[in-house]
Length: 528
Image (cartoon, rainbow, N blue to C red):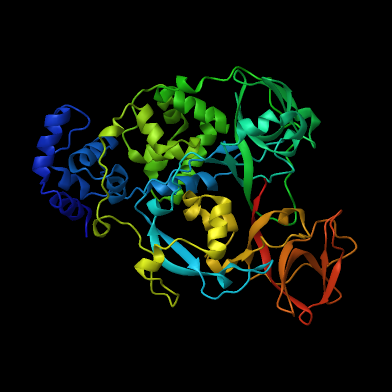
């Protein structure tokens, strides 16, 4: 179905013609308004390079009462891919991610407890206890109370986060327990990591409370990076870091932030309510992510290559012009590029641009008329009935939902990149939450590990080796699993514990006493 025919069918579900929509837009907004929908829209949209402006999209949404994100999807813009592109960009500074789920009507693959799965061992394949069931709408899986958690990506040069967090990790920030923890800060606060906003962006850091309104960013590895800040004037504490998704893509080396990666002299922090126009939003957001116009333009070229559309590219001079104009760019591609570059919420961008989002439609366009992907229900897997799918989870799934409280649905398009696997699936995930005697620091309080089952041969152990061995998942002959650093030595698997661990070195005959299942590429763990 071509685009013009799709638009015609969508309008017909509301008993509308394009002529009537054009009339209504002139009546509501004025014929000279940017929101005016021309009567020759069908002719325009037949050309893939001609896309209605964001103002015209909003007018279509208002007149049809269909959601703006659905109208954008009809013309090829999936807003939920913004977060994926944000995550793929290497960041020097820690950045606050856009964790919005724009299409709340999207279908999400879902799971249920496997019947008669038996007791949960310390380490086991997640598929041993969960099975795929009928997909659920995103709105059914979103938390009942929004605003509980923020998500951030740790920057390559965030000296305060190292060594507790790895560059590139995704961290979850609990905004609810802040006052409770700060009230007891003088004795216990150095054990925790906080997400702090300052005049130069964000950082994940331990804190030392000096006075009621004075804190010091604390780094055990970088004393030169310690800096005092006045709360409310030079810094805001956004919440406490309670979980980390750590990709482990390079096992041979860990990049340490340079010793010079310290904050400059603190400056007054701009009040949150002063970003009332697009100019300030773009300027402040670009400054926080630490991009020059030239660097941002280079990243936009990468975005245009990823999305195969040259309109996503923005020259440095164009990016500079956007920070002097009050109106949003004409092309929707440019708006998405700015949101990706500067980690801006798409709706916040439109609201700050002065667009009346309160007039946008509220109902979803029917699935058959919008390119909304429905996960396959017939892949040889167990598929629950509609009644079973709506039942409250129990067993391991209920325990996980209670512990984690919410599912970060905005990450669903980024799992391949986060795990380093081309075709990530449930069979790549292993439960390690019952292993109370972890033999590696990353496994302490870990819930899941993701395993690349195609890498089954550890490196040879030699006397000259100076690099820490990789993390591997090992299956022992008694059917139990072991996760830790291992290497091959004279045909044996040597599994070493970390210094201070309760377990010593273990040795197995490779292929006889134990075998390697695969290499760990990501760890999901709690920090509280």
